[in-house]
Length: 229
Image 1 (cartoon, rainbow, N blue to C red):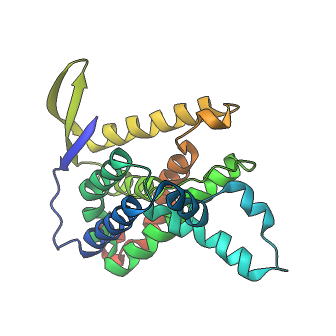
Image 2 (image 1 turned 90 degrees about the vertical axis):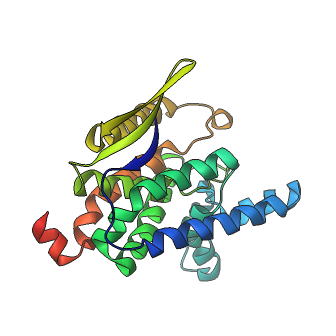
């Protein structure tokens, strides 16, 4: 299922959502300019490497801050066009209304903090992994979790593939997101015990991000939105 747009139009221009998409695009295009070796080093420096978190200690605050910082920087890196475009599409479809509900400043903090929480969920699930994890998926998942609770009556215009055929249908947002989250949980459970080299998707970052979004939306929504919702 590929979301095309939702049925709720935001009241204001989603400045932060657009800014995040531009920031992700700039970083991605920078990645395209790097050689393969430069890109590998770039990803290891700014991506989340779970095993590195064992090196966090008060005795080396600089290194510790660098490692913790990757929880945020990794959300702006992507592994290819499909990865990048998929995340940006979901962000564009779902984030404008969440930004509208929270307000610009609150939404930016929500996105960054929830993205970091999502990445740390991946660290907890894969503490010995030496493979860097990158992508906005965890932060986007948090936006989906916030949307799930905030706009249950919304509908999502969806491109649905049926084998070699496809159709466009309108799906209730609750159903769309429930199916999306269910697939992440099933995939996450299936990944337990899988060989590290065969696991290329941070399922637990998606799960952690979605749950974080559901928990945090009430804290970050504007007062009038909380009272009306």
